[in-house]
Length: 105
Length: 130
Image (cartoon, rainbow over all chains, first blue to last red; front, side, top):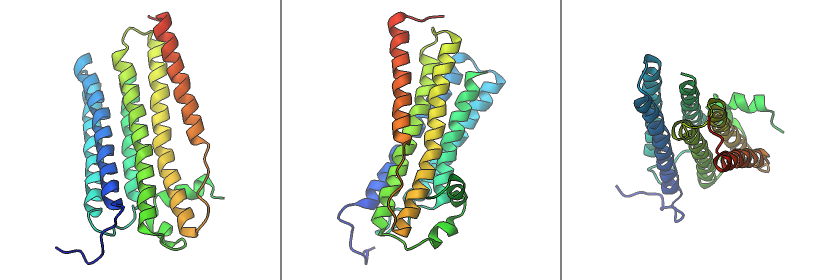
């Protein structure tokens, strides 16, 4: 598959794709800490729900990031859509809300 | 000058953002996207810090531990929401050919992180245990 458009010498799409990958890694670390909290403190029903929510949010962020990374694998990718940005930020916010819930249960 | 409500409307209306001005060089949009992601990682790091304070400092008095964790988590939430807002505003400014928006958020976040760090130092040095 030869690209008709010349490759960007600054590797902007690749750098952006790696930025998304770093973000998913940061999200994985935060989620792992949340799951660890439940496993160590002994799980009540509320904790189990929080843990499941954390994992779901993590999967959601991974899915959003994967879609964007796929879209970035062209020479001239379209700009980021507001919905993708909002989804990623709201996933992060919801993770923090889960963490707050865990503080008080 | 864009008000917060106006940029909030842009969050959920992709068409409206594209109607503004002209599409800039895709490299500028990607640079803006990476800045957004860097702020999102900062938010995730703050949230991870909140989880960590709650888990790895079990000897602290309950109020102190929860207070520190809450400060970090709230900072994480603000950071994530502000990341989208700043990204939208930058994207819009680039499309209109305006100057990029200035922000005092980095200074505020830096001050908050400094206060939390100082509190941790005081707690560790004076052994403020419950």
